[in-house]
Length: 163
Picture 1 (cartoon, rainbow, N blue to C red):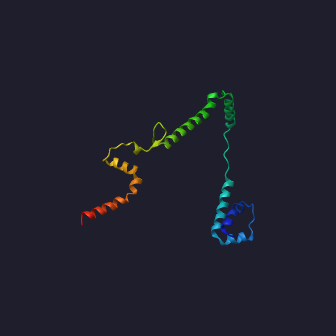
Picture 2 (spheres, rainbow, N blue to C red):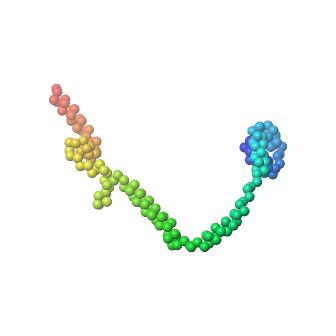
Picture 3 (cartoon, rainbow, N blue to C red):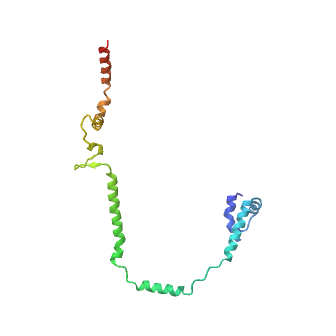
C-alpha cells in the first residue's frame, strides 16, 4: 500500500475503530514515517482522553436567565431600526452609480449635444506652434499618408536644377 492510502486510515487505527490488515501492518513495519505518524496520533488521543472540560460558573444559569428577561422586557425596535439597513443599501447603490458614471466619463469633456471630445481637442493652438502643427497633422493624417507624389516632385526638381 502507498503512504497516502495509509494516512487516511491512521486516525481510525489509533482510535481502535479499525483493525489493521496484513498489508497495513507490513507497510507500518517497513515505513518509519507512517509508523511515527501513527504513534503521534495515539499520543495526541491519549492526551485528549486525559483532558477534562472546566466546570461552568455556578452563577451561569442565573445570569443567563436575567439576561433573557432583560431582552424580553426591552422595548421592540422602532421603524427607524428597520429602515436603517434599506436606507444604507439605497445610499450605497446611488454612490456606486455615481462613481461608475464619473469613472466612465473620466478624461472626456462632453458638450451640450452629448458628443464627447478628447481633452486635446479643447486646445486651440494657432498655426506655427508645436501643438497646432500636431493637431493639423492629426486631422489630415489620411491626406499626408498618400503624399508620396511630393517626394518624387522634389527629386525631379533637384535633377533639373543641377544638370
